[in-house]
Structures are given as C-alpha cells and as structure tokens.
Amino acid sequence: MITDKRQTFLSAARFDNFFINYRKSVCFFEENTFQADSEAQEKSVRARYFQKLIFKEILIRYTAGDAIESLIPLLETLVDSYEGLQRQLAIYQGIPNITPLTIDDWLDQYEECVQVFSLCILLHRTDLLQRFVALIDPAGYAGDDTLYEDLLCKLLPERYDVDRWYHDLYTPLVQAIYEEDPTQAATLLQQYCDAWYPAFEQAPWHDSHLQGDEGSYCGYWALEAAAVAFLYGIDDGAIESMVYPRDLVAYARDVRPADTGRVAPLPVGQACSRTGYWFAPLETETREYFESGEVMPQSGGVWYWVGEE
Image 1 (cartoon, rainbow, N blue to C red):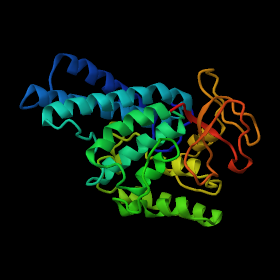
Image 2: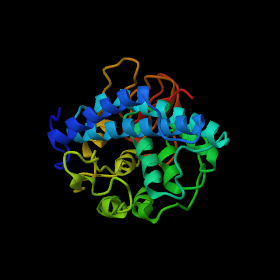
Image 3: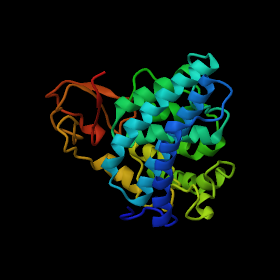
C-alpha cells in the first residue's frame, strides 16, 4: 500500500503490480528452472534474479512511503541474498573470490554497490555493511576507489587512504567530503544530485517510469549522497533534488532505537553508554574507541555507535 510516496512517478497500480509479479515469479520458479547450460549456471542465474528482486523491493517500498524501520529486515535479507549469489558465482565460475558486482567496469553496478553501503550506513547496520564489504573487497577493490573507502573508513577498521576513483560521476561527491567550506560542500552535494540521474542513461532502470504501471520503475535514489551527508556532517537543508533521500539522513541522525539491543547516539559531553567503537560526523579521524562511562569528546558533535570490534 502506498502511504505517502516519496516520488511522484509511483502509482498504486505499479506498486501492486510489482508484488503480484513478485509472487508469481516465486511460485513459477519453485517448479521451473532458468535457462542455462549447466546446473551451476542455473543456480547462479537464479540467485542473481532473486537478489535483484529483493533490492527492488527495498527501493519500491521506500519510494512508496513505507516506514524506514521496515526496511531493516529487508536489508538483512538482501545481504543474505548477495552472500548466496557470491557462493553460486564462485562455484559456477570456479573463482573463490569472485565479486557479485563488477564495480570498476560498470557504472550501474558500482552505484548498486554504494547504494547497499549507504543503506547499511543510514540504517545503522554496521554488521551488515561488514558482511557485504567482505564480498567485494577480495576481488581487488579494497583500497582502489576513494568514495568506496570514504563510505567505509568511519565504520570499519583498517581501511585505505586513496586518491582515485573509478567513475567521473562521483567527483563532486568526493570533493564534498574533503571541502572545508561548509557552504561549498553543500553546493557540491547539490551538483552531484543534479548530475546523478542523467549519468545513468545506459542503466537498465533509466526512464523506467515512462513504462507505465506494467513497467519496472521502483524509484531513483542517490543513497550515497545521503550517506556522505550523514557521515561527514554536510548541511543538506538546502538540497533540492528528487533523488536525494532526505528523510533517510534525518533518520540516521536522529534515530532513537526502541530495540534495547541497539545503541542510541550520544551528545558531546555525555558518558559513553557502551564500550566499543563510535564515530562522529564532525570528526576528521576514523572511528574511535571509548570505554563505558568515558565522557564523549566535546569536539565531535553527536557520536554514533559502530560496534565492539
């Protein structure tokens, strides 16, 4: 059900059709196989197909206005699906460290990668981020792209400082991270959002909103712009772009988890509530370790829990 849609292109019929077709696909492929030359290939094609469906479900539910918290179980399922896909690809191709996404060659696959990074970051699921990165790093991508590393370095240990990136589209976003003038950083973020959709003219989902209610549109979201704004404390108050998921940033900044197993953010000067690693958007360093009861530094702004390791 569409409650308060976040992009105007999504109709109730398109939303309903997505889930009707989703259920039909599940039923059909319970009894049928994908066209393939071998069992191993069929399993890899099957894994890719359902991984993409799960990713599309996250996008269309967010676009439809679903509560942000409701995306978290879907994100867990999505990371599970990438792990399953990687296992099947490794068997089929005979390459143990094969990547489920070829991020250096294909812009849309790089985008999918940083979108998943960003969902993990904005929904405060560092555990899922670590699992997903473990599928991509071993293929030779660790330490090879600035944005890739800058999305990870505040949350994961032993990341890399690198000054190059695969795709020119991301230049304004990288520059926004390192811009010292807050106004100019926000301007660069706006420039990135403006350039985002036109840059994906060759992506399979581009212009899918023109296909009508039977099409494949699920939403157009520059999730990585939101993750950068959150991680690096960029003021996004003046950003005007259909593709900028403003309420995901607000959620990431203001979340007060009802689940007692999760850890709420801490203002400066407050005692650390849990021993482990924390990060602050206004800090230039990576994550920092604090003991329970230790006073959070005044220089950091709000501190966010990362994890115990």
